[in-house]
Amino acid sequence: MLRPPRRLPRPPLRRSAATGPGRRLLLSTPIFYANGPPHIGHLYSALLADALHRHRRLRAAGPGRLSTGTDEHGLKIQQAAAAAGTSPAELCQRVSGLFRRALAQAAVSFTDFTRTSEPRHQRAVRRFWGALRDAGALYKGAYEGWYCTAEECFVPESQLGERPDARGRRCRVALESGHQVHWTKEENYMFRLSAFRDPLWKWLRDNPRAVAPEPFYQRVLRWLEEDLPDLSVSRERSRLQWGIPVPGDSTQTIYVWVDALVNYLSAVGYPETHGEWWPAAHHVIGKDILKFHAVYWPALLMAAGLAPPERIFVHSHWTVRGQKMSKSLGNVVNPAACVGRYTVDGFRYFLLRQGVPERDCDYYDEKVVKVLNSELADALGGLLNRCTAPSINPSNTYPRFSESCFPKETEATGRASAEDYELVASVASLPLQVAGYFEGFQIYKALECIALCVRQTNGFFQRHRPWKLDQKDPGEQLWLDTVVHVTLECLRVYGTLLQPVIPHAADRLLSRLAVEPEERGLSSLTFLPRYDGKPCPFEGRQLGPDTGVLFPRLEQSGQHQAEAEEL
Ligand code: MSP
Image (cartoon, rainbow, N blue to C red; front, side, top):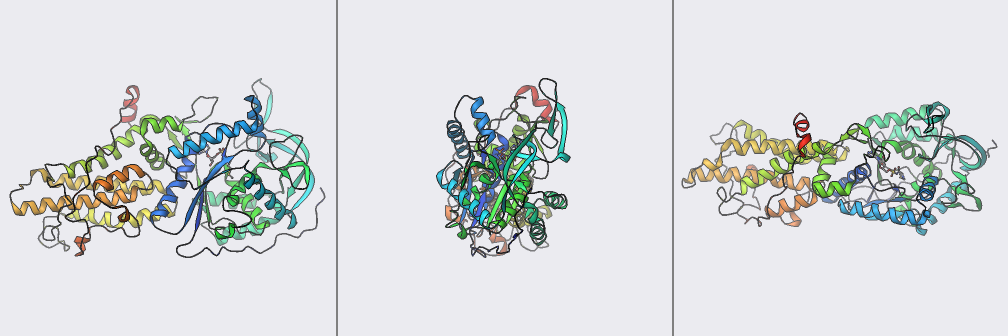
């Protein structure tokens, strides 16, 4: 293969001016292949990004955007359209609409939706290509190898295996995905990826948080220890018409992955206004597309004179009853049906509470019912019901806190027990803990801590049996008010912290506690100021109207109930 003289890599990785407090941040979901309808795996990627975006907004951390969209070019789409007897453009129009609606229905608060077939995106891709070409990062060469259409990439010999196809004939497959590969020989433009091994290595070494969680960071480092061949970045137009033509060479189509990755730049106005945002970008992606994002994308950016994204957050996959989701198995879980059955907030809570980015997670309906009933309906909803019940709180107000009942000094003579002091300490440290977990892409751990505190608060309420206290006795009434005040304060903290995950239920909870919209931010969140001798703005306030149960209990679907109880 003929290669041009080495002029790469070049160093000018301009940092964005948008750094420091109040800085801008672009959060992104991957853009979804428009060859089939959305499933819960897609939704999970989007919900993780949405929760981070909402959390950041509540911290008033500076202007933010959440980009998403559909990946509409390539052989995969071309073939899916042919199989469906429609044109690629019509298929994409329809499927893109499905994704847009599914995301909106699940309350994903995206600010930008890019379709790669849009002229504005195509222009950005052509300009990006131009930048690569001008930098000497591209050359033309004859390329042959095993091509996997399902993954839209060439697969090295070392990562291939064999299995029988539908007719029992032996065929080659990509080991990681199991998809069939075909021998492909053609003249392509090549990207000098091999020249970026050292710069990529340095970028990762200097930015140990660039790829998280840690096992994925290590995986990328291992890839860089292996052979890093140049990357074929175009396809012959005769084979692939559904894509963006290479500028100045109409016989070639730009590789769909280069086209797709540039969506992160076209969303922020590349090549004109992207500097206001780039490289303050955090990408949320699934583990199957890690190499594209953590090796190819940073190298392409460096070649085009831009810095790599700040962070890449990687998650694992959802299986269904222990099996990979697939059309042929007929076990694809449809997000619209789940949202219908479990409510938007319920389903969001389940996926974010049970999804652990480091490892694959298994989905089944009985588990959803069990988690939602125990944590949202019983623990959180039950707690709100109990402390706002007319028999306990007839004036329907945020009652007074009494320092004499709950003195700061534990040895003083109050009515609070050691466990009550533990509760106060746990809830006081919760906002920081939750912020740390969001920052570290461990939203499931943030939710686990909140669930634990909710359970502790139920214990507190139960322990003091406020319904047994004599409301005619002023001393008893003081203690009753204090118990309810502490419980409401805990609920206020949980409602505030849960907004990024269950926005509607959190809104209802906070409205019931008479927390005004401007009092719901995370930066000004306080807990039990009266305990620290400071005034509490809520004390004495009339509570908001009772709008019914916070989260309805769900019915377990009979035959699997026993199974769920064993969990
Ligand atoms: N179009 C590419 C992404 C291009 S981004 C520049 C793509 N699309 S996809 O529709 O196949 O996948 C979109 C996201 O859904 C990816 O993050 C992928 O990991 C995620 N999921 C697809 N199946 C999944 C599960 N079963 N479980 C969890 N997420 C999975 O890849």
